[in-house]
Amino acid sequence: MKLIKKLRWQFLFIILALIVIGVLLWEGQTAPQSVFVPENTPKPVTGGVYVEGVAGSLKRLNPLLAVYNPVDRGAARLLFSSLVRFDSKGLPQPDLAESWGISRNGEVYNFSLRQDATWHDGTPVTSQDVVFTIELLRSEEFPARADLKAFWQEIEIQTLDEHNLQFRLPEAFAPFLDYLNFGVLPAHLLGNLTPSEIVDAEFNIQPVGSGPYQFDALLTEDGQITGVALKKFPNYHGEEVYLEEFVFKYYEDSLAVWEAYQAEEVQGIGEVTPEILPQALNDPDLNLYTGRLPELTLIFLNLDNPQVPFFQESEVRHALLSGLNRQWMVDHILHGQAVIADGPIFPKTWAYYDNLPHYDYEPRQAIEALKEAGYTFPADGGDVRTKVEEGEENIPLEFTLLYPDDEQHGTLAQAIQEDWAELGVDVTLEALPYPELLSEHLDTRLYQAALVDINLSHTPDPDPYTFWHQTQTSSGQNYSMWNDRQASEYLEQARIVVDPAERTRMYLNFQVRFVDQMPALLLYYPMYTYGVSSDVKGVRIGPIFEPADRLVTVSDWYLYSELTEAQATQSEE
Image: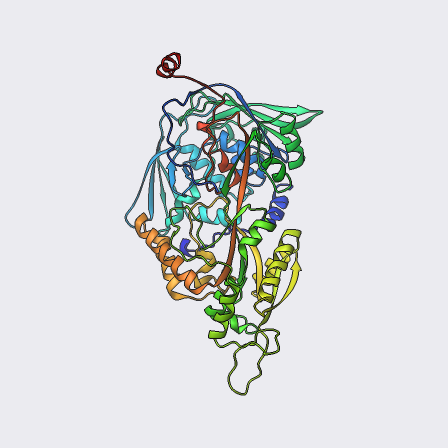
């Protein structure tokens, strides 16, 4: 199968993903930028222990397996390095790879590794380690996603020497760098094990990586693992960290984490959930850092369902969006932990178009738009009537909205129903378990409208091809059945052109076309909130592509500082 046709199934619905994970393994703050530093700011110095409380339990600190347990990802991020990392804008940055080059036709990628990168046991990191890790990802015996296996099975990898390697693609695929954001494993320690043996290897709880921190010890109590202690790796190839030790402590839930923070057992809270947000906001010694999550909540409209032909009219779709009080939903249902979504590509990333029109809550304007489109409102009140040809029956503008069967989505669905009732639109609500909603309605296209969450974790490259390209209407994830040739051409070109400026232009054009046609109703991007004691300085967080990205700027964090000689002299004067 051609790469350009390949579906990126890492775009998963959150709850369905968790179910699959359990089967496999038992189971706004702006982006970081250059910051003005006053002359009298103390100089950070090395030292101190930082302890973070997280809800959950440790499973495996192997980066290829940590993806299945969110609790493991933070520690794995600090323990292991990747070929490339992505910044908050979604742009690739060097990590183990010192540099890389791409052929003009976009089919060949050459990488040069840093020669100073070593494993925590002192062994140099080499090209063989990268190849070994990829061989695991495409092994039938290793529990990687099926689509990821298939992807890597099509890529030819050649080791040029100890620090240079080459990837050959069957065809140009611009998002390829997105697939290199995996933690590289040490071949010299795991190469003698089979893929299935690696899954249960002792290595997974006593790992050897190449990241800024190395494994120190497991914390245990009554025979149970209660935490993991990491210590600074002195020979790290990247920017040196200040914190001497980084400790993760595990708790039953977020309330237990909050209690641990209040008892001064931890200095950081891995995630400030809605349950503890009010208390956290009232703590003057706790700094909260918020970043946009790689998730999108939206309403898919089935544009190809003959039972709801009015969805085919962009005027109706725009009116329905204008009739939604999205800000009220964010403020009252999500407690302010979300931002309104104006486009299908994440804001503050390299491909986002800042000048997209914003749709405010304008119910009167929405009603007028429906009238201008030929829809009628009965003189005695009631639901808006569809426009019909002469002699045909005039029927109400009504449809069924499916939504996941949980409290938050239920509250959202009721708010949506009430907003649209103000327009005279009659909406019937139907709650379903997420797997059923996906497999029996979205996948089969047997639905009218559906409220869902899309999770795009681990995918810094925007590439919205699978959700909106016309070839994905039958078997892909184009659940809205949006068959728009102009938008599809932009997405096709953005997948194959190598020039970043040209890719950006294609995605800007796509976003303009999307908003003009509005094939689905975008609601909001949820936010992630991280809590850190005010004793810890230098903490920053921007838009993130997974919660572990809260640790991207860990090299700036510090507990201790000292005045420079000039500052000390000035202080004495």
